[in-house]
Image 1 (cartoon, rainbow, N blue to C red):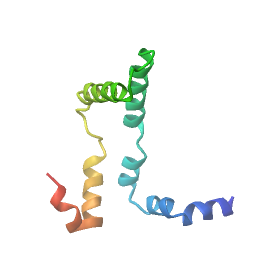
Image 2 (cartoon, rainbow, N blue to C red):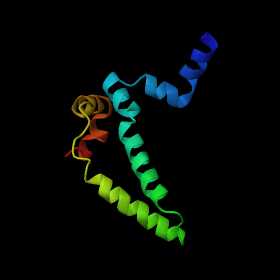
Image 3 (cartoon, one colour):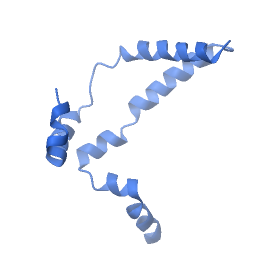
Length: 99
């Protein structure tokens, strides 16, 4: 078990995620929105038997994303706390992108 933990700790990405503050990690690991989008896209694709061209499939996915996007009105409840921690960590590199 210790060898596995050491592997996780010293692999680049895992180390980056582990050292982040809790609110930032919470936003990174939140997959509910991604899973919801994936479910909606699969539902749209499943209702069609076949697509005449790849472009037709891409257009359908584009329109499905635009429809789903209208439901995205509520930000994560952890976003404001995570943003404060990002400003502390990255300072001048992030402040130009804040509304």
